[in-house]
Length: 221
Image 1 (cartoon, helix red, strand yellow):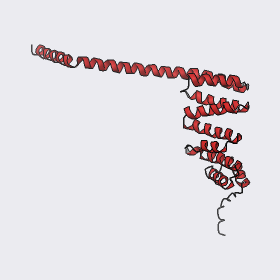
Image 2 (spheres, rainbow, N blue to C red):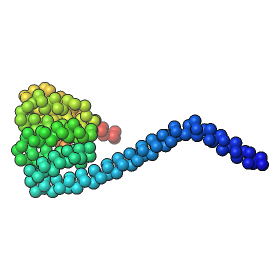
Image 3 (cartoon, rainbow, N blue to C red):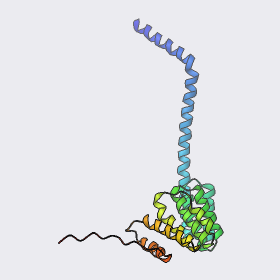
Image 4 (tube, rainbow, N blue to C red):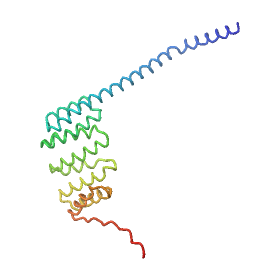
């Protein structure tokens, strides 16, 4: 009988708790289930988007290999409008910019690079800025090119950014500033990087000098 009374007390306590908190518990459970369902649905959506974007990117690359700029631009536009949040869209914009540049369509090249700057991650933004500055340099839009390069970038892009700044400044015949930019590019470039030689040549072409590396002293006899 004691056991029955204890069970009855537990049931009574549970009923009382349910009467007071039952609705709240139900709503919380519904909210948790809905959140999980939404999260699972979003993950499925993201995976589906990535697969579709990847297939379209393959088509874009095939068109680029055939130098079919019109098809490249159509594919890039589709990726940007339908799969703009995927990394494939940013990569596609960079490829489309190169395709347009090779076709001498600088306006489209700049548009694609600007899209990559606005939608890509830090690395792709830096690459797009460097390429956009190169297009602007070809157009002799020097101030705009320098403005594009003025944005903060990750340290690994410091050499490339300063090298491109040197190119723009040299084109403006601002030789003092160009030397400083090339020197900064050289300082940020690993000594084993084969690109150092080209930067050195640029530095010397604007009147700069490349400091000779100090050799270790010979051991005493």
